[in-house]
Length: 234
Image (tube, rainbow, N blue to C red; front, side):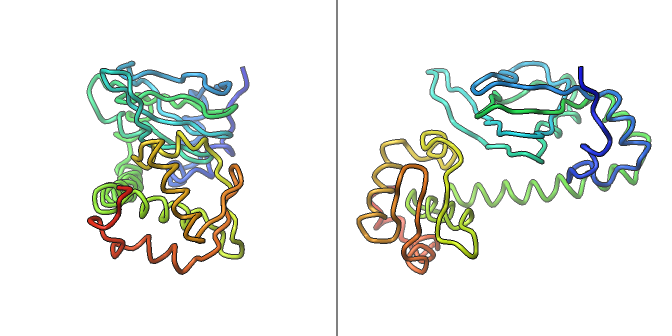
């Protein structure tokens, strides 16, 4: 089994505030995992004894309804961590399922030992608290996006967030069905929104490539001014 190096951990936001000695401790207990496309990492309700750093690839976090419908909660990319907040719970269990969207490499970190390390350092606790607070603000923004914006507006905001400053092309790096679930849009609604924006000359879609033809119009749609009452594709 490949050993995990301190260098692999140091550049991660969550771990950036750790001392060299703490990083060495985390690395000694960490495990490297490799998953093929579609392979499950864990399922909803499994004991949460580790949290994870994505080194390569992407992981989708999703919940399943009693009827089997899937809702994508988050797409975790390389360099990001997930499931770390569960270490603060007694007998924690994963509240979601996790599966690889493509061939993926992860580092699994011992949550129990990490929590013990935090108990030994108040300074490290405050560093981690600050990072988790930033994540919380991001989640609040996500709730606002889902509740205050229409389906069309949510798609516009997503495209603008992905659009390079010096280019007009966004390459969708996940399947459209996964993206629709992430944006809380039904697949058929996603297709109608895409067609509507194309018919209005705002975007041009060729497979996974989306060319933004009218950025100003897309920005107008992304704002709250795109009325909830007037949008038939909500």
